[in-house]
Length: 299
Ligand code: ATP
Ligand code: MG
Image (cartoon, rainbow, N blue to C red):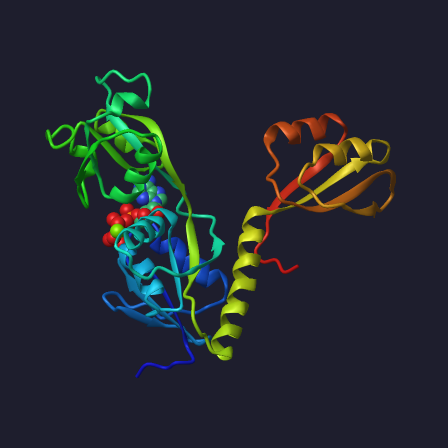
């Protein structure tokens, strides 16, 4: 039976966002009982129900108020938004947070043999895509007329199959494009996964759960972006050592037993420490340099 005091969150069942979405909730301390082939999974230790669906359905489920929260790519969200605007349907939602996964771009690509100098080369050609609204918005702004060919999958084979002259598809490394003899020529949209929330009344019990979840998500992402750095540094080089550690908070300085020429430094850094910086630290006389991952953080 549907419990109105449990927060419903929609996420992708299987695909590129599913494991990162589940991992995010797990890192937030939410225990989810995941059984294959089930549409709904229940959290055991928090009033949260997880709906596992196709990513294309997530924006609509949130915009129609069927679920309270959704984790989805901004590309899919923006496409649904533009679709609803063009159909004059309801489309309200709130973006609670951009997440640190699902990073990709929607790009235009053409066969490597096609000559390309600038975007005007795309005039009047046929472009295959699963994102017709995002593509139209982009090319309308550039005043480029084109013919579109809507495909829900296998977009990258469309030029070879003679269905289109170019494609507009998601890219992360570019390896799929290369394998299909295509060249990326223009980025249409840059995307991350994001956490969205429905608008309208949400009772105070659910609001509290959502706030708690948000604080934890913020902590998880901050921790993932941060490193704990420990090293020994010569006392007379402290300022130089600190200036190399960009992104670090003011360090904690501790005495070293039996050594008054060096100190131990501990700090949290929002940037990872690259080998080059570690080598520079070493040349300043620093030693025992340790870079550790942080599991949790709360400010
Ligand atoms: P579904 O069956 O849920 O509809 P799908 O095939 O449409 O899945 P996936 O390929 O799993 O979707 O991608 C889901 C989302 O992951 C994309 O919409 C995008 O936001 C993100 N993503 C990240 N990197 C990539 C990539 N290299 N290619 C495609 N999508 C990516
Ligand atoms: Mg999809």
